[in-house]
Length: 513
Image (tube, rainbow, N blue to C red; front, side, top):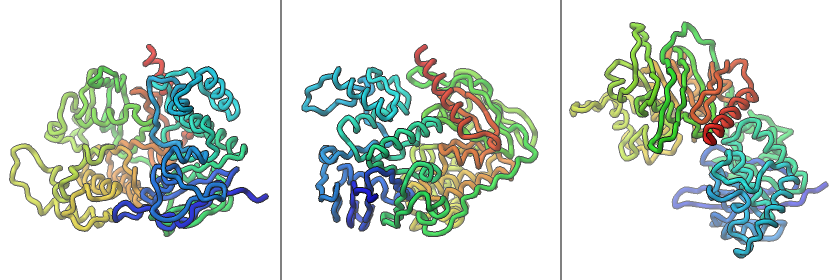
């Protein structure tokens, strides 16, 4: 049976100044299928979908809907063609109910909330959504908010749905539930397009996979006839070893002991609640959890950037075995104590590096102390050149301001600098976010090298498959609480997902209490 084309893109080109985001892209998505759009960061996936949904307009080329040329100049136009896009960052009014958000901005301002609520319930029952239309957005979990966004476009008649990284903030159980719903929509004749970077999810969910590389269309393959290696080669342009080597820890000793710490933010909200764990030398401790669950505050409290209300953090010197308290110490005081602590924060240019300074000067930040005005540039320059070479940083020179580098290259500079400081404790938050596959595996190898040298590593990640493959132990955090620590060699994604779910439920109880 021949499937009907829902969307056809013909020779689509989009530029932003001198940057070519998409170049002569030809792509077809059919009704009754799930099509995954795959590509590295900067490959043009989101730009392409934004043109279909009316956020951008192509410089060249045509878009056809149901085999008729369409002019889509705004999201309102896209809805006329029954196209709905669910963005990674939700666009909801927190103080409104689900139903109020769903009907907001439609029907020419004439609302029948009761009738709309019944229609929302009908859509929910049809596809298997679990949603209370009268629930306020601010009381919802991330997955519930996503449900509201999906039902919002279905309510408006969308039968072409585009989802941008829909599983980035979901537990494995929530992801599987979403996939079941999307399969029902596909079977109902809808065209589903998924933008993602998770290969295992692509293979599990989609019928076909379209690959972009550097803004250009590479090709489309049937999911049943491909594998991770082939898809990676299509994305990168060469074969990539997708195995993370993990050796067993050797001669582990306690390096950092976090003892019942509690932190409160400026608004008086408890962001860390009685957190305790131990990071050992020669081990990688992974931290899993929904984004915003306390990961940033935890690393900042260890680094001396977050004040503790209660509890303590102890560092064990590898040479003397002496136990030192880090409580109420600033980052400079921690360094003067002889504690070799390196921190790769989530905010690269806000906390990690200075955007207007060049790579050499950013190396010098590591050796700067108050009163030391005579700084030598040779050693930092040599280090900058070494990092550029070893980590394949794409930059005109070491004198280039880091703000002019791509996000991935900024991350390489930051990780390289912190590793070069020869730490005994290395904390990294989402270190491969924005990196291509080759660079990601380069970072994983660097972390494993540090582990082999006896460094205690704390790794905050968002990809559970990577956490399970790279780490020795995985700690799950949610709403500022630790809900479990598991052995990464024997744990499963479902087990971690249950702990993440428990963390969310505990957080709700806290908020309600």
